[in-house]
Image (cartoon, rainbow, N blue to C red; front, side, top):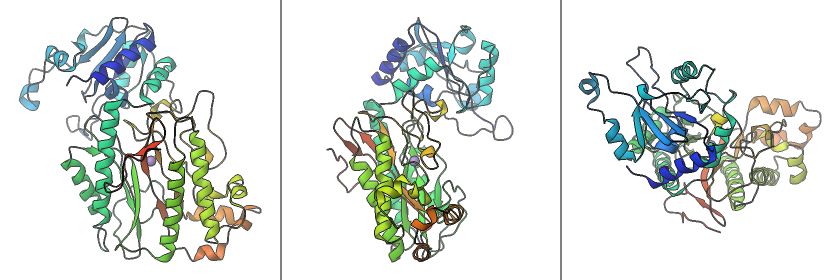
Length: 445
Ligand SMILES: [Mn+2]
């Protein structure tokens, strides 16, 4: 697989590193119980970005000699249990990159590292480099390398866009398949099985643990044991991952049995209007924060029209009243990771010099930078009735007055509604990669 985009990425990273040495490990498989019984292996996204293949244990080194890929030397009986492995020469020819075996790698003591997510490979690197190395969003990482990787991954090249489009399209199709099957008595597990099967039929896996639930107000509800009942609205947040690791992230909220109640339908329409209004603003140069604010404002306007909130929509957003129903951010970067590059903290999500707000709601905004051509972002406004939040607002001496609490009681059959699509920033507007197949997909402005 000679891939010109991968070569270009490695060359640009080498140039950005200016002769310094960088180590990018793929990571090692993680065992479930005994060592030989392992979870499916998925290489680190930084490694996939540069190499394009899931190679357990492999390490990419970038230094003043160029790029070199070090792979595990096959064990004597590997061929028996796993089949014959390519030699380094074969890897070199297939990937058009210099290669070696890991036992030939001489570590430069000043190497910068992008940690993998598994403890074992980070421990090995720690021992080789004689300093602590660990993954995780709050751990120290080598900043110049992290910044170079953010610059490389922030805007997607054509190969990435092709992969991301395929993931988004297959995901949108799986959601439509699920919608047509929802009926009382079906378990969420069975819905997941149908969607996963659709991904696998298309050579894909899943990008994150699915949320399929009638309890959509629990933002990360991963329990799939619920059985659907007539009158439920089901929130499905499910996304495919291509073989090369590119993710989709799509949410739909649908009724069990094809029809929504009038209250469910009214709230779904308000969320849908917020989703549409936010997307409409997208183009290069626009601050993502403004997309979030637009979603908040449209949502609040709709809730005022329904008589659930009382006051001037702009003032209500200023008073953070939207967070009663929409506490999270309107979206995030998407790429190889479903929340792209969050292993590097907020380096990718936040423009240099910016920090997260401490204000409730805004503090959950994962992206705060001007949009650029080639970025892929999600837009995912929602409406949730969270008992704990409602209590907090009801007991708030100032905020409680802006809610028509008795009217809200009539909406008890609406638990959680979210609509999420994957929006590519184009040269002059946007393109919804996860739009239903029968919609005009390329909506350029
Ligand atoms: Mn998302």
